[in-house]
Structure formats: C-alpha cells, structure tokens
Image (cartoon, rainbow, N blue to C red; front, side, top):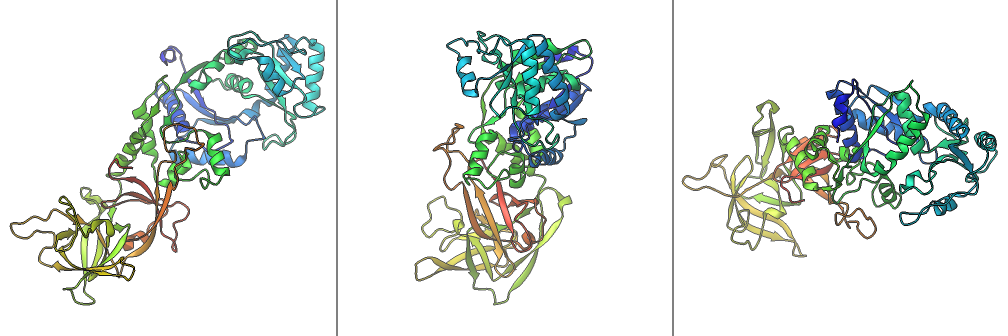
Length: 529
C-alpha cells in the first residue's frame, strides 16, 4: 500500500482533523501512522485543522484536540489551519472559472442531489451549467460579498455529470455561509468544501502523501482532478493513499453518532468513559502507551474489518500490570467480626506495593477485630468447588491470617448484618502444618477503611453493529458504594491502581477530590468484561 513512499527524497504527511468534535481512537491510529511514517523516513508531519465549516466548528474542539495530542505524547512539526488559505482558495476558484471548469449554480442542495443521480443512473446537467465565464465571475464575487442568501447559490466544479464516480458529478466547491468564523471573523460569506480545500491545502504545505481512511477512496479522483487543474511546477504533487479505519466492535467511532448520544443525555459528554474518544479513554484510565500498542498490534491494512474489543482490553491490562501498585478495596462490603480478638485489637502489617517490583516500595495496612470482606466471597450454601468463606470453612485473608467462619447475624429483612468468625494468629503468611488453605480473600479494616465510589462500565453497544438505535446497552454505568484502604483517599486524580482480585481502576480525572473518592473501573483482571 505504501510502496511508492520509498521512492521520494523527503516525505511530508499531515493529520487534518475537522474541529467539530473530540478525537477518538480512529484519529489516534491516523496520528500514529502519519507521525511514524515521517519519523521512519526522516520527513515531517504537520497538523492542519480543517476549519472550513463555521456552522459546526468551535475553538473548544481545537483546544481539546491539542490537549489530547499533548497527552498522547505526540509532537507535530507545525500547526496549520485551512482558514490560512482562504485567499489562495478563492483566487484558485476564480482561476477555474476563467478556464471554464467551474460555474455558479442556483439549484438548491436538494435539487443538486436529484440532478446528480445515483449509482444506477447518470446525472444530468444543471440548467445553469452553461453560464458564461463573465457571468460566473460576476456572481461568484457577489457571493463573496454577501449579496445572496444562504442556499441561494453555490460554486460547482464542471467535470462530468455522467461519470460512474458520483464525486466527479460537478461537486460543490463553495457554499454561502454568513456566519462568524473564529479565525477570520466576518471577512468571508462563502466557505470552501472539504473536497476542494484539503487537496489545495496539501499543495500549499508541501504535503507529499495524504494518508486517509478508505471512505475517501472514491474521492481520490476528485482530489487528483483539482490538483491536475491547479498545479504548476512551483508545487509538489501530493498523492492520496488510503488505509482501513480503526473500528472496534461494541464501540462508536462516529462523531455524529457520539454527538447524538450526548444530545440525548445517554452519555455525559465527549469525555464519558464509555466512549472511545481520547478524553473518554483518558478519563477511564487508558494510557498513551496502551493506545500506541493497540495501533501497532492492529497494523495497517486496506481490509475494512472490526477489531475485537478484547484486543483493546489486552493492551491496557498488559500495560498496567507492572506499572501500578496493588491495594485492597471491597466492592460489596459485609462486616466480618473476629470474635476471638479483643475489642480494640489492632495490628499494623507491612505489605509490598507490587509482588515483583521492589522499587515500588511497601505500605502499612491495619488489621482489626472488625473488617470488611466482599459479599461475593461468602456463600451460605456453597457448591463443591467454592473455596472461599462459608460456615465452618477456613480461608486466608490476603497478606495476613487464616480465619474461620462460625456464625451469621441477620437483620429483620433477612439480609446479612455481619459474619462472625475467628482468626488463627499463628498463621500469618503461613499455613497450618501439613495443610494448605486454597481460598484467599481480600479485606479492609472497618476502623480505617474509606468510603469510595466505584463506577463500573459495560460496552456501550449491545452488539457489534454501529447502528445506535435500539442498540444501546441499558445500565451501561453502574455505581457502587465500596470501602477501600486509607491510601485511596490520598492519591491524585488519574492515578491508576490494581484492586487486588478485582481489576484495574483509575481515580476520576474530574470527580475525585478530598470529599469524594471516585474510581472508574478500567478493566477486569481477566477477559470477562
């Protein structure tokens, strides 16, 4: 696919997002590809904001894109804007009119679509297609000055209304949009289309290769048509090359569909941790290195297929395994009272923060008469292979002692109030002589445990189709009030940890504070989510 690149002296690529939404995983793949091509071949890579439609674009999106790129750890050689070239594009449009290759059309957008035809039928010419060059120049200049209402006229390239490629059936080059532009103010009443602007912007920036996704394959002939009819020996002729976009099943990578979910309050914003936007993945706890690893593992291809979401889970799980400390947090707490310990019993236990990495240090945890254990680790009527706690059964408390359950105290509604048992204080980090205890459960001191809010996420879509109607997972966010070690109240937002026996979690970027300890579940320890 990229075989021609080795034949050029210097490669210049670019990443050209439209600032009408936040970056998502598909953009990460494009950034990764364009920057790495330039790096490997000792060329350059630019970022260019395609700010040609002020109706949808906003500086909020520009700032978010730049922040996401910075967080990802990427740097571009220069930052450009398509609006830098509005004067150039306007005069080039006049040049095409003078060559008889562009004309002003009075048809409405609906009529233009009808005249264009479809894949089964050829298009037919607009009644305004044969206007004189003089009339077209006059009308186009008046369009620029704002003499016509929006939708009243457009400028179209004059190519071939019978072409099998619909993009060549006299595409729109300019439309009237009488809206303030964040960079050019009220200077312009007309704005270039993406198909017209991006190829010519490539020429002006010296781009050698326009690397884009496969949905632009049909636009390649149009890209080349504009370049052929405008290019002179002063500029390099860029080449368009397509690759398959990053599609992950059970997920959305369409800004339009994501905005629909936001507008309908199905998700809380562009940075909702259920989304594959960069800011959403960052908030959930994904790392830049894991996203780069995902790009590497999925590779570059022209085959449009969906990537199994388990690949995404694998890269973050493997990335965090040796990077974060382990702590204990009880997701569904139930009290366990060790009745053979005196009231007020307290012991400080020193534990490793990581089982392998000694450089991560140690911490102190408190062991008391009353502790929290997870309700899922207790069963009144256990099955044969249940190795955790039940009446008369022994288990080991992580990092400490073997205990035995003796009794259950119930509330009036028959829910468990507390479990009672005893601790064998001669079994700290060792078994009974000649007998090994299979079950190990985690726990937290009642006296020192801190209340935390746990946010668990499911896949946003019920199946791997991107159709969002009737395909949204209900209750894709579940909140649990849990109890964790004291350490969980003393970290910074975006800190990532492993909750032992549960999974990897991240202190919420916005909602974690000294009064509210909120953690987003990144991923389970195993492929069961």
